[in-house]
Length: 264
Image (cartoon, rainbow, N blue to C red):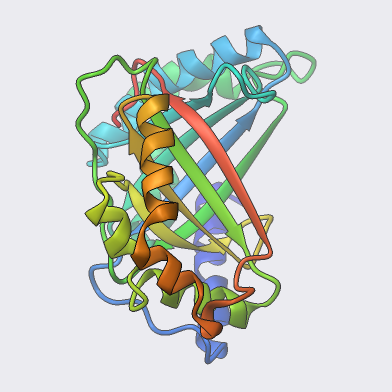
């Protein structure tokens, strides 16, 4: 089966699943979809191969396809995952745009030629160990992504990607409600966390979960902002509400730096 047909099939299946679950509301017209690709690496050689592919083949092709803002991130130096992961954030206006991307790439001969060494790498010298894809839909109260603007060098900026897992789908929906009507997104914006996105995971390996990304000029700014958040009266009141208790069973924070060629 061609990759294009596979993605289209996944998209259709997802909507059938969502329609069958009363706890999931129908998406609003302006809510965007996001894809997060995670490349898992064995060594510096693979890291260099993925960097070269993304910088010189994949991102230019996405730009030609009309997707201008693409983020590429790596774990901070203090993380045990440093040098082992590369995250790619790709925004889509619609689910059809996501499903049709591979077809566009297949017809882009500039991309096909530039990507050939990467895509046709020998089996005994792969350019990465594994590749994971996560599909997300933006929250209603932040239906589109935002690109932060910092004056600090990319190597100093902190992009924090968080995944909140829930014990059940019902608990996950309540946590999403907490972000939207509960006011958690509004609090992040009020305290200048410069969020990139807040989104529900529609397909991924840790469901049910949501993911979001906030940004900071540096690690000191990161620490200061989180202390302000935790100490705020708004958060103390919101987190103490019975209806939002036990909505997160596991929180996974990932501190990242943008690459020099990242669009974020």
